[in-house]
Length: 555
Image (cartoon, rainbow, N blue to C red; front, side):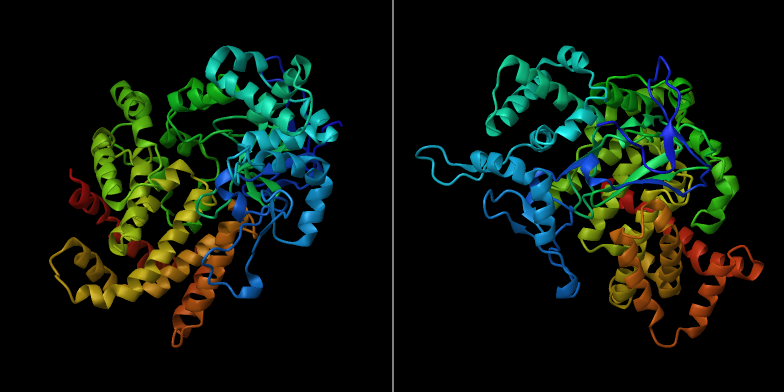
């Protein structure tokens, strides 16, 4: 099976240092969809183990848990009655997956895995996600032939980490064993090569907020090269991968995406690329050791931010940072020291332990805070985690203040394009927090007026929170198709929330002003309305953020 690229893309010239290349067949504007990788016969998509029972194994729809949606719109999944491992949302999906791989040996393999050992009772064992992906490839000769064209860096895996190599061999043997195949040296060697190629060329499609999980590989998409200053990015919806343009792309220009979080410090990026992908990046960001603020200044379409929560282009061009990371070796060393210890997820911690850990991380980021580098990791993530923590604890005022601070002082620099997915996601968080603060403002003001929380609510009480929320929703809905797609769950949730606000009685004047701004955001009257009703209130709320952090976690 020869790898075939979808419309919008074609193969470009190869180089000795980067190998293959994929180029655009025509020009694309920032946010445009370049290509959609939707050929299900040319891809493998596997949910991870914790989400198997909530995810359709074919279309990857996620079951609604505690959903407020009408019963007719909710997704539910049922286990395959034979293996009890794969789950499906419909008979159609089960039949399609049966023809793809499940009926060709996957189901029997899963049954063998779950079969109890003698005297051990009922077993519920499940193979690791990489092993299940390997099984699918081994059962599909067309996929195995296509993957054979990809780079696997087998020798690099063998020499880099003995334990990791042992794990790869073990997973290869497990896949062959449960498929009922021979496990001789030749068979294991072939399975190991496929496993290495899956590791190097697969994408992580996990989204903890939306319940998406697992790995995805499409042999055509895997041909696209990496850059830490990418001109394109990938989003996933179901089994589809959607390739968008970050900036203007010319005809015959090479398409480059980032295989990792390209906003990390260079040492973390290089480590991630070397560990998993076995190459050293030589892009401009790496060779010149550029930080997020420098890369932001390079973005050629900063004017797009005129319709965003950060319309001050001068601030994007000249960030108010006391010391840039790239020019301060001491600060770089500090980031290298604290990054790993500030990166572990906090979801599984108790509220008390989470508070303790946030306090520790906040203090570890003291040097970054001193130079006001709020867009540099791990400080940004500490603020994000804190906003989530406060919101879960019901302190919506603190959560909202920090969300506003991030929208002004971090997100636009990490992603200067206003359709940068984290920026759009943060606006949705802000909108939801505004609905919570609006509902609790009167109750909060009846308490101790001297607390910082009360002062935030006092600031909110003088604002039209409904109008503020509506404008934020209108902006994020506008950018959702470019940030992800119109199939994105956030897009539909935002539209539902907006409809509720627009239908409130007595808001005809406000709705008219909002509509006028959206139609002509650069008009003088419309811009004055936006500044007064939206931007100034967000800036005022953001002023409370650092004080909230210091009050809760120390200086």
